[in-house]
Image (cartoon, rainbow, N blue to C red; front, side):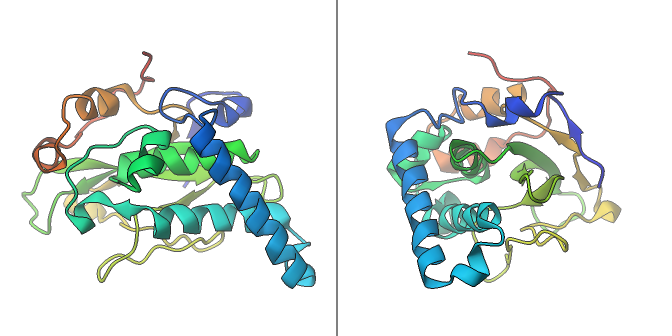
Length: 221
């Protein structure tokens, strides 16, 4: 896929914002913790890690968000979490909050990160409504191009991994069912997504009204 940066300057994908709030102390602490984990890995396997510590840091960051922050609907929680710092507080979120957290932690450690979206069918039926799913793309300096990651969290039917050359995301689209990967890379969350998420505090109610279209412009508070 050829990606289109909504913000033309890569520096926009390194900035803190209302929902990608890596300037929050809680997010900074976890970003620093990931740096410490990287140094521990270097000390244990220097020959393996030193060739590209940035990629190893990105991998550790991805695994933390994928595996240590639960997917709200997998664990039956009701809180709706949107900001990266709130996701850390609650230790769970849906795809939107998890994408904001992954972007925040990547950016906190100097790795450009975007939020991106897919149109997916809500269930297996061809007549099921299309909804938006959020994931991320990152652009490490050593790679020099964007590649997507999905930190939704794995289960019996979802198997996503940190891969550069062969993408392994949670939900590969089925074009025959009208599903679509959107190529636009957002430096901030889409306006329509946040407008919908802000209307609900109960995740079970939100599930009935999930965002189903992008505005193509940023949310500005």
